[in-house]
Length: 177
Image (cartoon, rainbow, N blue to C red; front, side, top):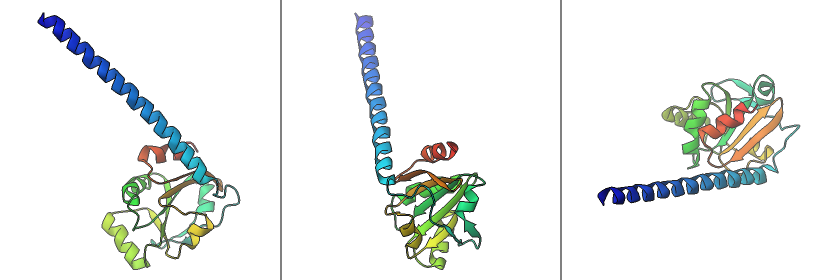
């Protein structure tokens, strides 16, 4: 009798695992669909062609022209703020991306240059950063939410997403170009 009870228990356990797996896959598919729909909705106001200029001196002392750079390779543009709680989760992934991809970050309303530079050093962030302390660049680009990530290639906005974005999501968007 014990072996039959063990088989029944094992079967019930397998059925539960299969049911949980199906629910998890359904949830993940639903999350991806909702996330894509929200990205599409939020991105409708962003310029696609004839992009506003994004050329400025970075905190690292380099002149950065995102449009010109985008003709060489795709550029990940990251609008963020030191005050943004979600950015504290996204920034480490952006930092990792900067090791192998063209990344330009726009720090929105994050204080004067010395304060922002100290923050970047404290966090160990190496990505190129333009200080947009008055949000002028963000306004030109219609950025209202942080974080906002864009992929620009050949002078055109190819992808835009707002809110939390994972490292695989960033890689996927960059590799599509």
